[in-house]
Every structure is written in C-alpha cells, then in structure tokens.
Length: 186
Image (tube, rainbow, N blue to C red; front, side, top):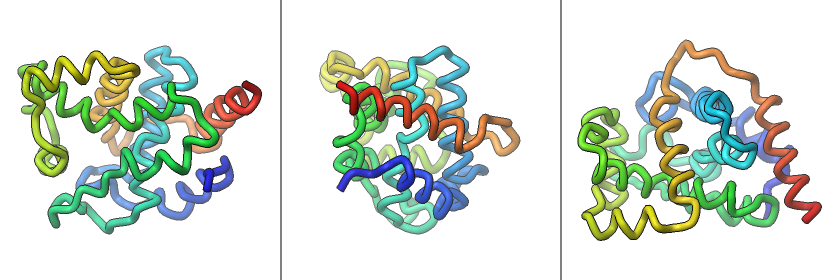
C-alpha cells in the first residue's frame, strides 16, 4: 500500500511528538530540521524530500522510546520503502535507504566523525553492522545516490537542536507533494 501525502501528514501529526531516540528533539522536529538543513544547503527538492522522510520508518514501525537501548534495530531505512516506492522516485528513496550505511561509511573515512556521534547513534551503529572496512566503504560510495546519502547523513546528525526554528510541516509536505506530482506525471 502506497502512502499518500495525507497518510504522511497523519503519521507526523499522530506520532511526531515521540522523542527522537534519546535526543533532545521529537521525531517531527528532527524531520523538519533535517529538511530545513537540506533546503538551506540548496539541495534539490528530491533530496529535501528525502531528508524530511528519511526516518518515517520509525513512525510506521513503532518500537517505543530508544529501541537501541533494548538491542533493537528497527531497520527503518528499509521498512518505509514499500510504502513510498509507488509514489516517489529513486532520487528520494535511495538516499533514505542508504542513510544508515552512510553513517557506517563516514565512520570509516572521516577520522573525527565517530567521536561526534551521539550515544544513541553509537548504539545503533553497532546494531546496524558497525563501521565499514575499506573495501565496504569503497563499494558503498560507488553506489548510485551514495553521495546524496552522505549529505543526508550529515544533515541527520545536525538535526538535533531543541530550539532550531524551521519551516512547518505544511511547508515540507508541499515539497514532498511536488516531488510526488512530478513522479506521477512521468
């Protein structure tokens, strides 16, 4: 079943106030901040949409507060894809799918990256397979949309500010709606 724009709105309105896994922001604040950072960086609409939707799988596969503390990897980056694939292009879906592996990649290639991860990101990294070795890192960055996933990951990591002002839910739903319309018209 494909998610409509109304379904996405419902998920954020219904579950957006859930804490974002041990961070000082809610799921909705995190999504809005990620998308705002993408927009501020001049990213195309498809990547802004990916930044906004990258953790929607958490809202579809509710595992309670901070599942990583209980040893649970909810595989949110995969869980959401069947619901979005009928309505969004790969330029949105692939950065979402790859954003967890982008963390594993950045830990392998950026010497200071792992030290900047939050406690929950460190726990989830272990559950998600740990740091890539050199061969895995090379294979990852050669994938289509891997560079976009790395950008998304950096916005994801920065989107944890409890006082950051962002455009509202309607603004980013409009971005997603335009991307959906373009995909539908293809």
